[in-house]
Length: 248
View 1 (cartoon, helix red, strand yellow):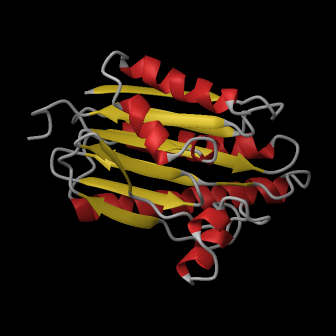
View 2 (view 1 turned 135 degrees about the vertical axis):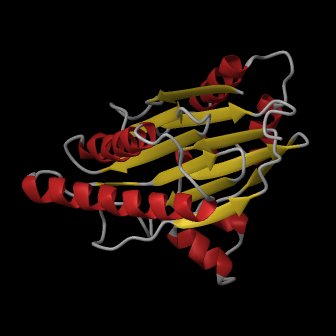
């Protein structure tokens, strides 16, 4: 396995509200997490940090996640705990207007690979040099696309393209969308929308498939490309390469 993660504030925002990590426990299981925070008075970075720190601590306390059902229950339980932590923080800090965060994660064990998400941070797998999106964005424009009211091209320029329909900290009860994925893939990529709004899937795929770059150089190049196109948002990427035979 090779892994690398990086976050960058971009060229427009004054500070970074994203949080990102990749962790490995004693059983050799991997957890990748990206959270894109929102809210006033730097509350967004607090919300995203609560999410990543909470999951990281709980994951590292585990010797093994267990079965796939155990993992789904563990993820749902922790997501609700995070949601409650964020809501409680907002209650105790009135200046944290609109405090919340997206969340996308991937959990890889020797037996299974599952993704989870809330919001518009994205999860992908790379297989046979092709990048496949696993997660679905919880955005207004995505609902409009699914209803057939607008096209994907129209969504790129829609005035409400940044409106989220789900986020941690927004409501008392929240459900994590869970995706079961064939674990026989070549790579796992998580990112905030600071990457996907600036680069197409094909552009991201091209960088990931560049055999002349090591994993760190690939992620740095993706962030530099976003910034070269304006860097309108914070950019966070977590990437894990699964080398042949490692998950058999």
